[in-house]
Length: 325
Image (cartoon, rainbow, N blue to C red; front, side, top):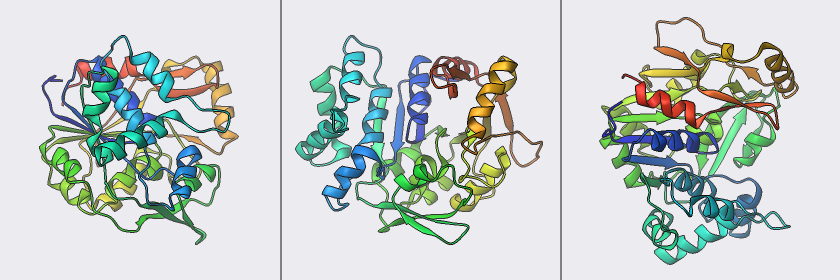
C-alpha cells in the first residue's frame, strides 16, 4: 500500500493497538486512531464509579497512544510503567492520563504534552470517539438489560446472546473523529470484541453518517474466535449482518480479512480449539458469498503461555506492505 495514505483505525481493547503497531512497522506515518471511551471494567470501572460515571475511560486511549510510538529508547520503559498495577489493581496509565487530561483540559488535548514528557515520536494521533462520558448498554435475546461495558466481558461465555446495544446517555461524536473519517483514504475496523470495542465507536451521534459519507476504502478484520454472546452465526457474514444493521448500509466494508488457521500444527490446534470450546467460543469460518470480498491470510500467532491465537503485528505489517486495494 502507498505509505502516504491517510489511515483511520477504529476500535479499542487489545486488538486495534496490534493493527496500529503493524502499520507503524510497515512505515505508515499518518494514522488517526479512533478509540472508545466507554470501558468500565477493572481499575477504569472503579474510577468511573468514584466519579459517578462522569469521566471518560482512559485505558483504550493510552494503549493506542503507545501503539503509535515509533521505536525509541524510552518506549519499552514507558509502556511497562503505564501498564503497572499496584497491589490493589490500580493502573498507573489511567492515573497518569487522568492527570494529563485535567491539566490540558480534555483527553483529546494530551498528545503534545505526552510527547514532551516522554520524548515519544508518534506516527499519528489518538482521537477519543467522544469527549462526553457515557455507558454502553445492551439487551440480550432473553430480554435482560445491562448497563456497563464490563458486563459484555463478564457474560462472554453466556449463550444469552447480545441482541441490541446503545449508549446512555446519548452523546455527540468528537468533531475530530468525524473529520478524520471524512478525510481518510483507508479506514480499518477491528479486530476486537464487536459490542465492547468496535461497534461502540459508531454509537455517538454523527459517526454513522460520517462513515457512510466517507470515500475511503474500508477494511474489517474478522475476529479469530467468536465469543458465545457475540454473534449468531460464527462466519464473516454473521459479522457483516451486525455491522449492516448498526452502520445502516448494505455495504459497510470493501474487504473483510480473516485468519488462515491451516498454517498451524494440527495437534496444537486441537488443544487450542478444546480450550476455546470450554468458553463456548467458536472459530469464525469463511462462507462463500457474493456480498463481500473476503481474503484469508497468515496473520496470526499462537500465544504459547495461554494457548490462544492472536493477530501478529509482524505478519500484519508484512501484509500491509504488500496489500493492494
